[in-house]
Length: 219
Length: 219
DNA sequence: AATAATAAAACAATCGTTTGATTAAATCAA
DNA sequence: TTGATTTAATCAAACGATTGTTTTATTATT
Image (cartoon, rainbow over all chains, first blue to last red; front, top):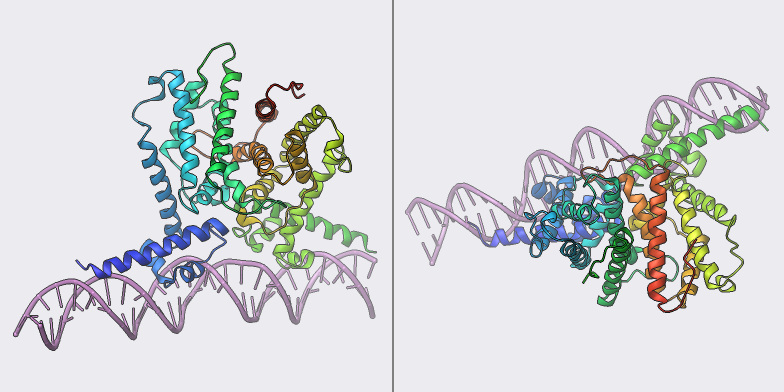
């Protein structure tokens, strides 16, 4: 077991990963070459084939890693084993919002992860990977239960995507450059606003659909 | 003035445009080569340089054309010369929704325009073109007026992007392939749902912000 | 005969990948 | 502990394929 070498290997592997995440996020998969990635990471281009078997393997590795991270975080407050219909409606609604609350946090857990997520949820042409996130599946189940629909119901898809779209608006914001808007990152106050907007929309949605029925306000 | 030749030229130019719009939408700018485009259009690769001076020129031409189209449509019911503050609040709110109502329609006016718009509003790495759509600028002005903010206020940006995100959810939908969701296009009923969601959100937003003040429900 | 649209071929540059050489650390015999 | 050998990480260079663009030739209309 070589220790020093192993460490060096891990270090340069991590450097490439960081550069790749950054550049894929900025320019898209086809927009970056492995030479640019390795130059940014101060590594030799052969290392990508050496570590991941190629450019595509590197990309898949990054996505898988992000989905896995998100799933692990979600597991600290969601039990995927418990089906949503085992919870009462108020619990379902609160859990749904808690998940989105957490997703906003996750998107900004590092400088570039939200770019990758943005690509994942919005860009068809980047879908080189099959996205089977347990968390996203669970969100669909929750929505189906809250609004008394079948999980395959088109309306569930609508509501799901509308909520995802709220996240997307947060993602879009830092990269949107319409006139006055600068490409700066957000502070905690901005995240609070995003969350409030999601909460507002969810409340409006729930009140609209369950007219007459009385539920607690979420949170 | 050659007539037959001129016509042939215009025909093949249009064929390339159609193929380019379709393929750029599907695979992104860097994801398609001009050979693929021209093969799909049944044209020679040199024609792209001949017509647009190159691949980038072709792309810019497509975007400009879409923005121009959208602006023309908007002009039929928005007078860009009239500043939003010349309208009363109810008129402002109704105009804002009417614009979004119309944008939903526009996104589905042809098979692929919504892909391009999606790219425009969400993908940073596709921003090869400066997006200065008069309509988008006018929407910002309207929001600023409705919520009594300066146009440069960050909150205006938030609300603007949240509304754009509603559109984005509509764009995301056909290309989202999470399990049960098929990649089919929407019918008129789906568009109605999108519009209702936007209306719902706008109402919730306006009510939330203008608590105590009484405004007509939009539409 | 002149002109303009299209086709085929060649252009240099870049793509992702692989090869063989080099370096340095780990291992083991002495 | 020392010195030789093995092993693994990294390097520069070259691979063939593909990129967008340009050039030259051909076709058909004016």
